[in-house]
Length: 180
Image 1: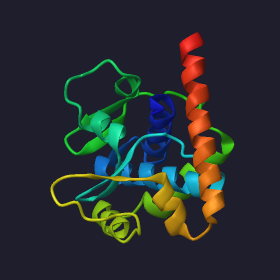
Image 2: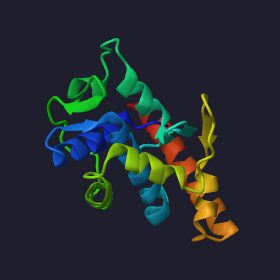
Image 3: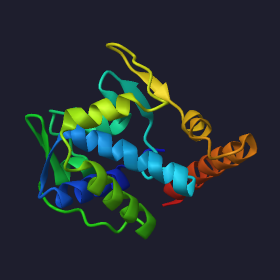
C-alpha cells in the first residue's frame, strides 16, 4: 500500500538537501535507490510504491504520477512539492515525522552519493542495475522479490520471509485505516 506521506517527506528531505530544487528525473532516481536500499538493508521499502522499469530506468510508479500531474490535485504531495518545467521544487516542508532514523540515514547516504551528479549520469547508472530491463516506450514491473534475489544477499527462505513480512505490514496498515 503506497505511503504518500512517507514518499512526500522523503522527497522533501532530498529537496532540502539540494536547496529546494532538483531535476525531477534525478529526484525519481534517488527515491528509487533509497527505497531499494531500505529494502535490502532493513527488509522493507520506505514508500511501498510499485516499482517499474521505464525507458530512463527504474521509478516509483505512483510517485512518478504525482510528479507528472498537471491537474493541481489536492494531494498530500501537492501541498508540499511542485513540478516546474523539469524540476521538482519544495514549496514548504512537510516535516519528517513519518520517517525513521534508519530511513533518514539512507536518504542522506543516497543524496551524498548521487545528489550532486548529473541526472543523465544517474540514469545511465540505473540502466546498469540487474533489475532494470529496457521496456522501450512502455513500462514493466520490478518486483521486490527480484531485487532481493538479484542482490545475492539472501537465501530463498530469507526472501520468502521478507516478502511475507511486507505483506503482513500492508495488511496491518489496511486494518488501521479501516478502524481509524
